[in-house]
Image 1 (cartoon, rainbow, N blue to C red):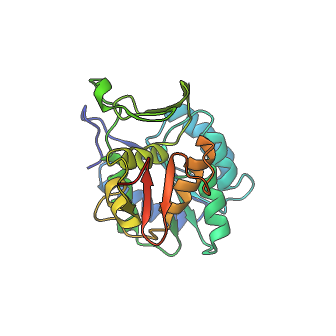
Image 2 (image 1 turned 90 degrees about the vertical axis):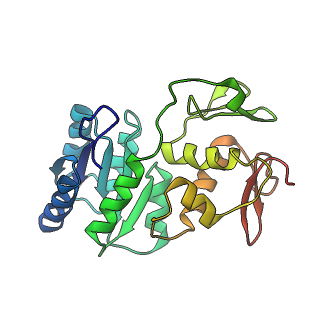
Length: 237
């Protein structure tokens, strides 16, 4: 499943300086129907992304010169492509920093190319901006508005810049206002039932959402923590 609704191939950019590993990833994505480009350094990756506008970027964190974090930061100034970060280091600092600049998911080496491909395919199945805007679908919590059809979040009328995954997380909560959703429920709603990884990935995206919404976790004006269970948006029931 590497094509969009119009039948055109999804474009993937693989940024990896380990050539043997990159060739395997490219091969799996190619067999899945993606149109794949491969580059080995960060500066070329940014240039290539500007030129080809990929749907998804598989991005190694430990690139020579311009590293994956800076590449992701620059990508986010002009691209809303999904970004899957690859890291050879398992400590959470690298992971959190990488996700903090807009990565949607991460995979720690060594990894299964089949699993990586499945994650990328799951991202491509997420809904795009709706064709028919229906005001009745908008969730309003105080001065916060979440519009799933336009894929927009506003506070007091001002648009909040979110990554696709951040929007998908808040939209999942908004579909069940007041209800507590567990990490596993949110993972299934956003990444799909077949996703394999650390469910605490949700905590990272919730943290980013709170920062962008100006929502103090201790207060929970918009997103509230149900300790030991998960999260809810708005008042509980």
